Figure 1 (cartoon, rainbow, N blue to C red):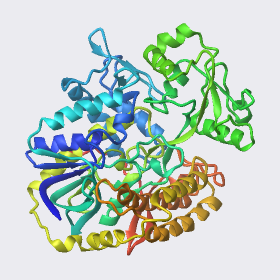
Figure 2: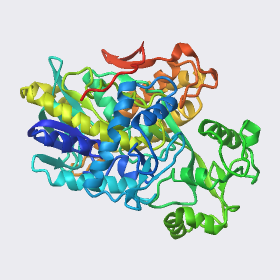
Figure 3: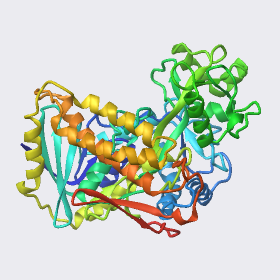
Length: 563
C-alpha cells in the first residue's frame, strides 16, 4: 500500500480546491491536491458558462454591502451572514487577482464588463463570453497550480475515508483508480472541496462527480451538515434537441434579456393558469415556473421528452444575434435554430445550498478538517443568488487554504496503520463480491429516480416518509452488488463508494426536508405551502453511532468574518 505525507491535503480540484491549494502553498505549506478526475477538469466550475458576481464597480457604482443585501434577500432569512459577507467582501479581490493571472474577462473601454442578473440591483456580473467563463476560470487556476513547486497533483484518486484520531484529522484513505489499490495519506490538515450532490437526482446539470462525496466524508469524520434540504432546481434546463458542449441551464440570460414563451405540448401558453404572467416576455418566478411545468407534464400536456417548449420564434434574428451572437453560432452547429423551432426545457437539479457546517475560518467541528466551495453550507441560505457560485468557490477556496496552512503549522504529523484498518477490511470484502448480477449503475438509477419523484422540486410529507425506508433498503443492497474483478480503472470500485456517498447525502436531504414543515426558498412543501417564522432557523445533521440525527440552531447573524 502506497503511503504519502503532506501538510495540507485538498480533496477535489475544481475551482475551490485549486484556489485552496494555491492559498495554502503561498503560506509555505506542502500541498497534495487530489481529484478522481483529471486535475482541474472535473467538478462544477469548468461546466459553468455564464457569469461571476462581484461588486468591483467597473460598470456602475457598487459596493460589496449592496451585494450582501441582495444575497441575504435571496437566502430568505437563514443565511450564515458572516459567510455571506465573506463571499461579497472578498469576491472583488479574487476577481481582480484572476484578472492579473490572465483570465480574459470581457472588457469595454478598458474596464471589466459587467452585466445584470436576476436578483442583483447593480450590474456586477463578470463573464468571458457567455460560453466559457467557467472553463476560463478553471484554466487560469490550473496554470497557477502547475507553477507551484510545493503543490503535488494526483488525478484519478477517490478519497474514501478521512482518518480522525483523538478528535483531530490525521489524513485520509483513497482508492487509486489507475492501480485499483488503496493509498494512504498522512496530513496535518484536510480541506474537503469535492462539490455538491445534484447527481442524486435523475435530472441534473451536474458533472459526473457531484454525488455528495464531500458530505459523506464529512459526516463519517464527525462533522455536521447544515440545511441539506435546500436544493436549487432550475426550471428551464435544456431537455431537447441534443445539445453538445453547452451548459444545460444556458437559457436564463435569454429568458431575462430577450424573453421567451413557455408553451405546453399543445403549443399553448399556460403560465397564467398557475398565477403567473407572460406579457410577451417570460418573467415568471423560478418556483412558479417549475411548478407550472411539472403540472402540465403531469396532466399529459408535456412536450415529447417530458418537459415543455421554450419558444423564441417571436424574437427577430438580429435581436438574437445582437445579444448572443457567439452563442447563436454554437447553437446552429448543434442544429438548433431558435428562429424556426422551439426547444424543450424542464426543471433540473442545479445547485445545493446546504452542505458542511463551518465557521468563518472554514473549519468544521473536527479539528484540522476544513471545507470550501459548494461543499460548504450556509452562505446562500434557502436560495442562491445568480452568479454567486464561482465567487463562492474562489473566496472559500482561498480562505480555506489560508487557514488550513496556518493550522498545519501548529500541528504535528501523527499517523498509524491502525487508522486504516476499517477501510482496508471493507475494501478486502468489496474485492470478494460476485462479478455477475446487479451492478452499481442500476442502483444509482434507482436512487436518482427515487429522489426525483419524492424529494424533487415539490415535496410532501407522504413522499418523503416513503423515501427514507427505500434509501435504507438501497443501502442494504450495497453488500450484494456485483463488482468487476479487474484492477486498472475498475469503475465498479469507484461507483460502489460513490453509491455510499449518494445514499448518505440523499438521506440527509430527505430528513432535512421532512423536518422543515414549511416552504422557504428552494424547499417547497405541497402540504406546507407557507413560510413560517418558527423555521427561520438552521438545521444541523450529524451521525451518532451510524444513525443520522438532527437539531435546530439559531441563524448566525451579522459579524465580520475572520481575516
